[in-house]
Image (cartoon, rainbow, N blue to C red; front, side, top):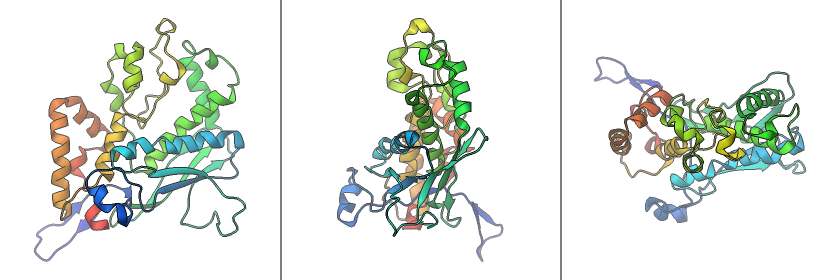
Length: 303
């Protein structure tokens, strides 16, 4: 948010901008991008894994980053976000260099994780991130999953989970925190879209998941019962329909001459969806504090 002052104003005007990474196509792909074809960005979002991270968890953290690729495809970019191991033997790269973003491992009893971003307050352009996950978030994940999924998943009925299950739980945390670094806030409305009876319907869960957003606090599907035979992967949150839409809204190309025209086009995407499904408007309102068109994208300004 910023305040705009002008000689012809009789009061200060407040401008709200979304925060997002600057994703633009390679010069040779610009026309394809404008036509809506999938193109690779000139500078993808690269998030490195802290080399202090225990080795068995690194692939799951990387997978949590790469899970967002399908959301960016809906916005017109392929390979837009990439999780990578830190090249420990490359002496030309330094972890203290502000140009690099990380998922940092924090050996601590704190049972939590966080996903900040550093952005330019004048435009909302995200520059860098240092996601943090504390070692003891694994205790929290263990207790959540045991209580919420223990009736359905036999693997949850252990004092110590096997590495694959704990890895998938860490992957879920990674995806959630990466969502914050992309500019998404907590979405406490998306789970309200899912009819309770659908939480026990395998076909519904395969198509939609049990919540429309990984940014919700819906956690795991604890409504499913053993007789429903819901597999483990359908008990987890995942990148959902809201998340894909939010990335499309924030990152898709719009051929607009200025921010006001850009806002009108984005609004034209949203209104029909709200009219067709009032719950969609509720989800957007819960997620951002207002419907998305109340905030301005800054593509023209950044460019």
